[in-house]
Length: 139
Image (tube, rainbow, N blue to C red; front, side, top):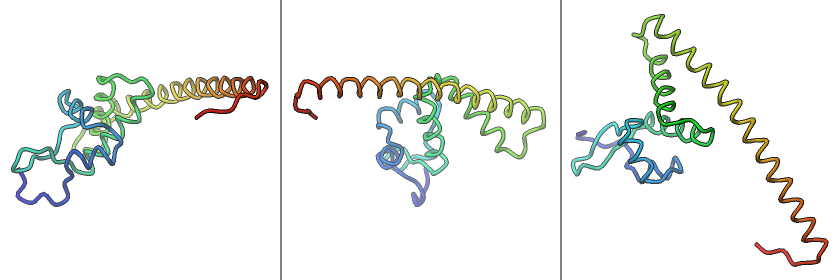
């Protein structure tokens, strides 16, 4: 428990910054993806900027269809590359993992872009049909 909580953020502040719900952040803690760096005297979760960065990586991976296990593997690979004490073989494996995730992220993002294009086409089709019938637009 830190005696000085300066530099730490409480879970509500983290939720606001990451646009994740409190429930989601707590879940990620429970499954070991992002654990708070500290706890306050009252037992409240306290997070650092590095914790927020991890949460943002997870938030970016989620819409691309990555599982929690894959998110953990990617975060572990990033941590390995950030650790100067790690050997060359571990570093090479972590880098290969990141390249694989990058390629999969590109494929998934392309798929989502196609789906979004289809959704926009459909919306435009409906808008044109509504316009033909002189029906007032609702919001």
